Image (cartoon, rainbow, N blue to C red; front, side):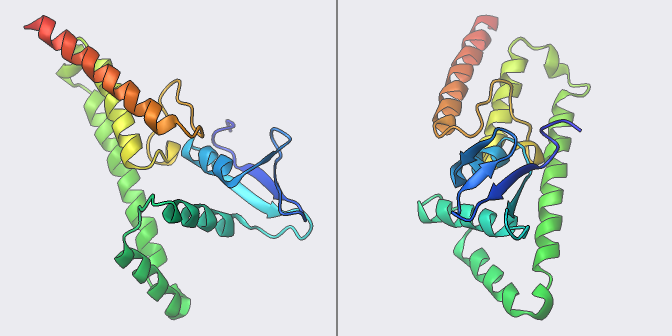
Length: 186
């Protein structure tokens, strides 16, 4: 199992500091969000009790992003989530969300597969740049959620605060290059 596939163990100390067991250094919630965007699964455990705190910290990451104006979840979805907690056993919401995200991942994988398999466009000059733009677009649209949504592109610096603006600049440059190549074909 490669490093990207195995869960990254984060230990929470009594001081509430979070410790990355792979790199032997302390990390922040933003660092953890970066690991996840880069395709890593994380597990956060309390050092003293051994309790799994992953869910609590993932919800905290989502809440912080929402409070900064990075609204991904519409209010009606948030209302439905709160309502699902009022139903004994959680109702159908967890299964629905799981199925929806699995379907989204499968459809994204099929779309990327269809773009490359037996596609006459692969012979067009600049197709690789267009494919890279598509991957970057999908990553941007899914919040850069890493391998579970779309594979990080080569040279991707997941976890950096400026990655979105760097990706946008990279996409603009690739688009300009592609337009230049297309104009030369005419």
